[in-house]
Image (tube, rainbow, N blue to C red; front, side, top):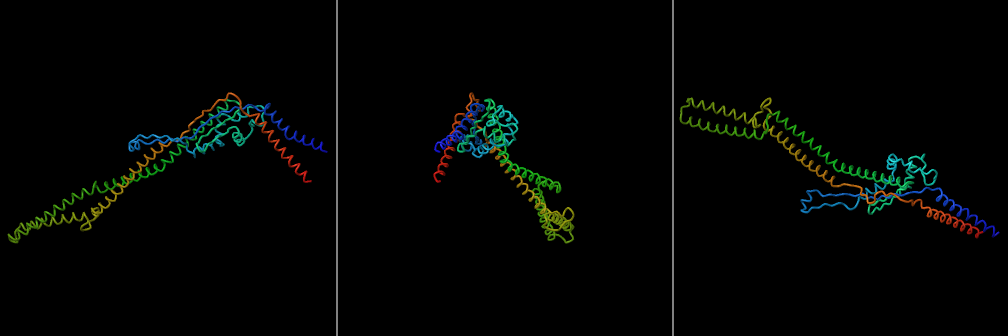
Length: 373
């Protein structure tokens, strides 16, 4: 009975440990194709250049280039390298199905050319190993292929597409930084244009370029008329005291006074100081001045808003141009000279160790159950 049990243990060992390990070793050393690896390393860098104005204002030339990449950009790039979009781009460029299905028979390590894009993405994640340090932002790739030049070509394509993606991110960031300033500038330009049109229409309608200057002239005329009225009043009083009541000079001065008073009344009506006028004369100078001042204030406000919006827009553009992302490559795609993968000895040893562990656990369970009986 003990001998039978020992034969059973030996048979289980041969079936669960020796046979799988031997089969895996035969497959790895006799069937599996050699794989070559190309290494490429890069990081996202951010360049921050101080403007000339800040250098002059500070009195010292300061030109700084950021030494650390943007962690968020590196995270985006890390996910992008594993995305279906990148796999599709490189597949269209290099034909990944042809590259990875080249072995005539290798059902474990080769790709089935009839597989869908989801299968290709899953296989891609097996053949492109990513090492990413979130603290430094460094990304290192090890690209596997069955030909060293194919591995180098795939690594170079990943580097090219990653550079394009970072450039697109930079363009989007610059566009976002300047879009709001551009919208404000366009509104300020439109407001300034409308106010200038309104001022031109006012001047065309009233035939007055500057009502304040015109009013000064009218006030001068009114003051002159009032002075002449005072002089005429003095003259007629002197005549009444020194001449006969029927002296013709008295009547002449009375007519002169009446004419001056009529002119003064007309001038006052223009200022809205008396009378109502009719037709176009109903628009008194006080109304014109109020309208002109309103238009002047609106025009000045629009001009100041335009200057401020233009300054903000130029500052936004300058700031966007100073902040720039780029992909810094510290390891260019390498060309392998010998096959290091698959690691046949390590895989065979891992297969043997795993099956041995499973067999040992099974034996422990078996004897534990047997002893309880």
